[in-house]
Image (cartoon, rainbow, N blue to C red):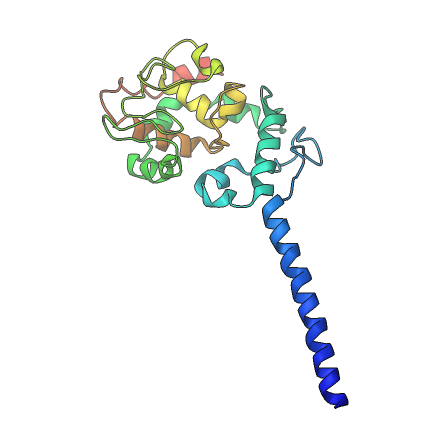
Amino acid sequence: MNRSRWRVALFCIAGWIGLFWGLHFFFDSLMGKRYPARLAYDPVGDMPPPVDLATVQRGWPDSMNESRERVRLAAYLRKMEGQAPALVATPGTAPALAQLDLGTLLAGADANAGEGKARVCVSCHTFEQGGPNRTGPNLWGVVGRDIASHSGFSYSEAMSSAAGTWSYARLFDYLASPARDMPGNRMGFAGLRRPEDRAAVIRYLATLGSSPPLPQPQTPDHAEEAE
């Protein structure tokens, strides 16, 4: 008899615990958790950003399944809006930048390799002729096209106010860091640091439609003048 009473008591306790946890999960999923849209620290100087935008873009939209990740990304973008990351001068890098020759880089670039590197952009852009706009505009014929001129796409104010065309040099600078090159634009891509990677992507973009002739590599005399 006593054993039966203990068994009933244990079942009752287990039932109350199960009911408590069930109600907890029910109300938690119903109400949700709120996270403040602010960062725990400021992304200043040369500190690595708290959000890797390139990784976010590659994994979109699965990388934003959790609400706290979405809020974290929103907080970072709000913090960085209109700001340009500070450039940190590294001893010995100035001569290398001065000798950088876009014509030589593009002449040695591989369009097929550039196409592979551009696959990270397919979540926001299409590349085929007449392709639709997505988060970003269609990129067929982008080389030589006026900035913010693709039909049917709503550009940011920063992009719309930019003058000129997407020349090879302009694309080269922009792809290094869209946020730094054009503060306030909505492109959420961190950029391509390696000049060779940017040259490969631009060489691929040059195959999409009628693009201007590639810039000529500098001769030794021109290189000395540039220095």
